[in-house]
Length: 198
Image (tube, rainbow, N blue to C red):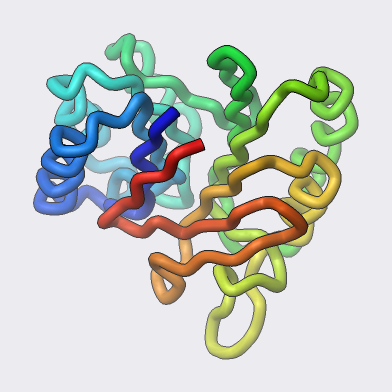
């Protein structure tokens, strides 16, 4: 499966245009946005509609620039958009799980409550792709002014669930950076996006 992952567009139509061109050139099976597709929810419906002509499903989560309800409203208008905030979406053996909103909390009790139940729902054949807005704690993706500003709860999820891929954004200083936790590839694809084969 081929993914085009991206984050933090903040409503820039020029970045959307480039992503659409990249999608046409690479024919991904899925588009995945790790939050902040808009600038504080402004023109959110128009922004996501820009991707409709590609005829490719768009999986997304809210960032800290839009609410979950705003994303849900957009999802109700377009069948190609799937919001995975605090929920999973399955394609064969691939399980996409998302956790959005926030941005600077060291821990997220809501996420930690989900981990055990989510783990029980998985079989050994399942391959998890974890999509968050905030990056995991103490990685190359969460450096901010020489300190770590990521989420310990997101890191805990990764250490317990062991997804094959964890996509995040939020800290623009770390765009295009990659790291690993165990065997999990961590990536901040930034607004330019990355093609990833899983």
